[in-house]
Image (tube, rainbow, N blue to C red; front, side):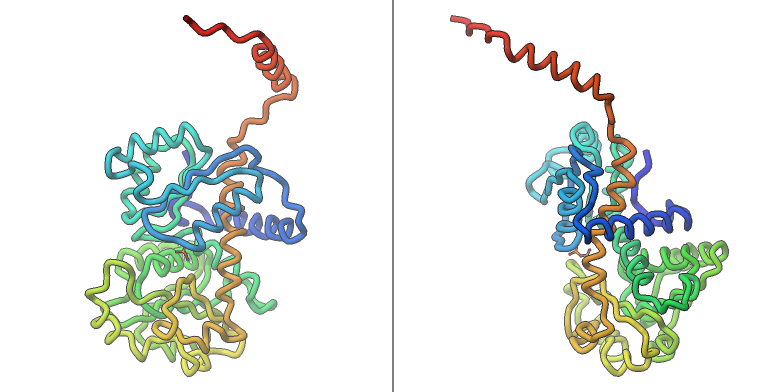
Length: 340
Ligand code: CP
């Protein structure tokens, strides 16, 4: 069973094809001419954490493609409380065509996938966020200078080594792009991620740089990207993290203006405005944060079509009519009298 858990599970060619499909589906949608490719299909969406973009984009994508999505929020299904992952995964698989899951732990997602009999799509874990970064590189292709190729693009991620940072490092290096992570040494991408990135670069021709110098790093950036400096569960670390990142690693106007005049500002959102980035750059004319968010919708459509459409049954019309005849004939018979 093929799942969408990590961009590392896909070749550069497969990821390029996925992004080409995003473009086709986006164009069709913009013209109100999206085919109902997933008519009758259902997506189970498990969320152990809150979400705005991921939840809305997957649900709307299913509706636009003619299918249906179920939001399975914490406390409303038994997962992890009164039912183990295997049973939940097996049961939901019998009823839906794919499962999207945002889990606190990556292991929960992997266990769901190991037991599922339908495709499982990663909606973010404590390790990675692959749908976000396929969307991000697609967005970069839309906003790059026309004379630049994908392999020319320089992406500078400034801030904590978040799950988005992990996925972006792996996606960019896999695609042959040039990725720099800029952070204080304690918060830089761990060696395990760097090893994956270097292995990607050896195949793709891309590059990976780790730096603690924001100003020098943005000098040739095409895209500057940042993410939250702390997340739920890291509240006790806020004073230490704030002291480590502020003010040197904040993406503010002074840092943004050290980049080339074509450089674009990116953030996966949600943002802590005034912390990792200021309003002046998030709302800058060269900020593309809302294009990124919108492209989550088009990306989810492409991922859903890629994984669900080939699995949908397309019965011959004669078979459909035969079953309809059987059922209508049954329904037209008088009902049995109930027992006294
Ligand atoms: N970027 C992202 O995944 O946003 P949500 O947490 O709102 O889904």
